[in-house]
Length: 390
Ligand code: SF4
Ligand code: SF4
Image 1 (cartoon, helix red, strand yellow):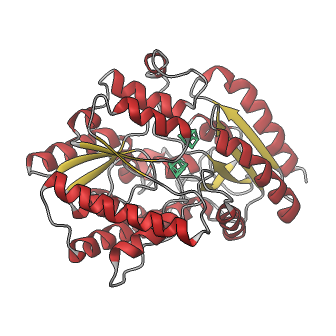
Image 2 (cartoon, rainbow, N blue to C red):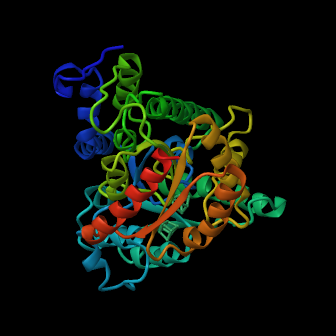
């Protein structure tokens, strides 16, 4: 293992090239989307991890995540949306309103689901600008009728895309897309493990940034392989052994909304696992490679333990596994202001963490504005000190 302590990371860390590549994620994706569109592929905007990317890919589509992480687009969104809803919804909508998201502008269709109320109703406003298809997501995760309905919604999405894009989505195309997505999930999981080594090889922030808005980009796969084959440690100030090992849970942190991750790691914590939709939650389980690809897709996506499900026991099960696997010493839950489902569920998460695992738990409720960073930092520092001195 190369140890680049004392030298600049740029000069000796073999992970620097792939990490630099992901620093240019937006332009990489733009280039990819433009050439895919020129080749006749359809750009499809998605807003949630329940959207089955494999079906879009099998329909000759390119699924692009449209979740906004910028604070800059929120004031425009607040002209139409209540200021009290979550910043992720406002930011995403603000991009659309300002025509500031090139992917959204070049998309043929947007796909959403009935997840939280804010998103679901925001889709109705988006539908005034773009073709919008909404899948009905049943929310009783363990109810067989709910699953049957979800499976029917998956079949309906396939039929919709076939009609819309004038293609035939065959089982073999679906199986091919499943293979690609399973490989992406495998590579991302392996890369995520690098933050969990005793001397973490990558920071939590680097893991968060090492992915793209578009799934299945071959160049991303090459870069993941490069990171995994390099495996060179850069134990700089932010990483290194002896730092409290933190699991971050809660809401997703889209591109540019990494504020809390930076605060935790700058305060001396090592974020070794991320139980959220920009982390391990959507990549933890693969789609089974069976003879009924639509059923396998329906099963795997229905297992995503989002707080819109009730009850959401699978999230507690996933937390149990991650706490053990990543030798976690403390849990920080991030809740975007206005996100009622994660906010209410945080009570159950806290009780579970403190009761079953006897670990410290801290909930941070915030938005995309940097105005409360000092206050958040103080609370994070207090938690990290408590772990260090225990
Ligand atoms: S947190 Fe829930 S609603 Fe948000 S992207 Fe994940 S699955 Fe979708
Ligand atoms: S963070 Fe919460 S309120 Fe915001 S889009 Fe996700 S589930 Fe909905």
